[in-house]
Length: 589
Image (cartoon, rainbow, N blue to C red; front, side):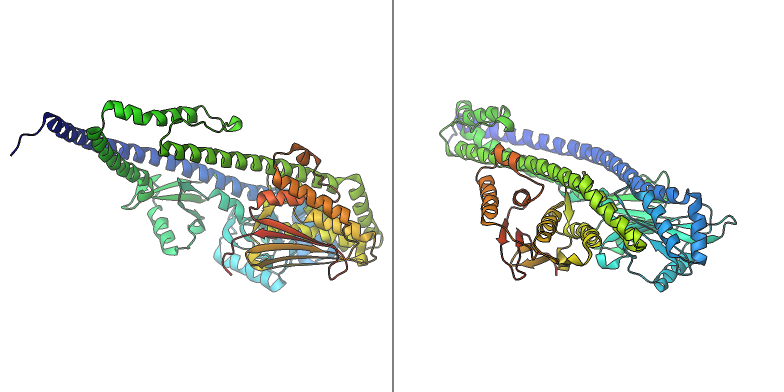
């Protein structure tokens, strides 16, 4: 057996030493970090549970406050007792007015209703139920819950809207008995809140993974909410039983379970974090350590310190350049090395920075344009001219004795102002947009009567598609405004359909149509914006009032990656059609 060279023996000895040191370091590092991650994870999960419970408390308290505000009105209970014995239209309107007043400044409240076991009810909105259904609901409450106790109430989890099932909306509900002076139950008051608010609260994640959440309510520990997409009632029952004996933190073989109780209600929130998610990062670290250890052994034996420094020089320069780079003042990097890998990193970094700059710029423009649009629409809705005409129409209805129509017009005006003034919400579902549009058209119908006809059609599965707020109302407003100048009877039709991967929104009228100059002006503005999104002059000159179609088109081109439009100057109604094509992903249906 020949003698080995000293260099070979040194290389082998060094390799073994490096492997042993890396192995020991890896084990110590992994054990230490596993304990650290577990401790930090448990602490973060507990904080997350407490914060989620506080947010749910706020959600429930918002409904409770509306109940208190309604019942605090001493005349409300008296009016309701009279109405339940002898219903009249005047009392119905007065009670409904009091209920609307109680939540007019709370945009998260969907509806207030009051009813009794005899089938009498008063409900805000446009209820689609009859007295028999109300009687069944009241009987179910009396049979299921102990509502005759002091300060009793019931919270119902997310379920389809009982009062307007056709909307397909899910709501959470608080129900509280109304008692007279002798503490007899004379009815029930029901407060609804859109389920999307509690969905947003409970949309929790750990890194990129979803955290399961269960909310149990009342003395019976009813399941109020669960976040799992596939509703597994067996899992819900398992965690209900596991957490009955209160313990802020528990661990099973596979999960870490944290719970927090409400400070105000008989309610508790349970968060379930699978351990495999908690240690997911550690497993990645372990694989990375093994990989890096192998590379270190190979390159330590093969390369000298000089070669290592020489190879790492371009990368070090690139890192320094990255550390000094600012997206707001980004300059495309110069070449810092001649090797292929560094060139790929430079190109990838430059492309990533370009995409980030484009995305940030588009987001800023979207927010700027959305805010401008919201203010423009709000100003249009509350302008003296608009309010003068609308209130004048309502006054005419009152003079003619058409009080019900006048009340409906007032409610429609209230809904329009509430919707337009919700500055915090920039994106809405198509269903919400069309609901607001129906209120607007109902108000216009009460004003123009036989001079206005309208039709709205939507494919059901499109109702949850997201789009910028107040996309359709400016188009419909223009259609009515300019068509009334030319036509005795204006007909406006709105369609929402899905064809070949596109959600198509079409607004059709029988008015005078676009002039060629107007169509060319709109086309030029949109094309100029697509060519150069940094052109400040285009942004500053976009008009959102009047014929502000170009502003709407540019908003949609920013919001949707795949967007196009068509202007039809002479449709089958003899008027104008505006068709908006938005590429979407069809789900279900």
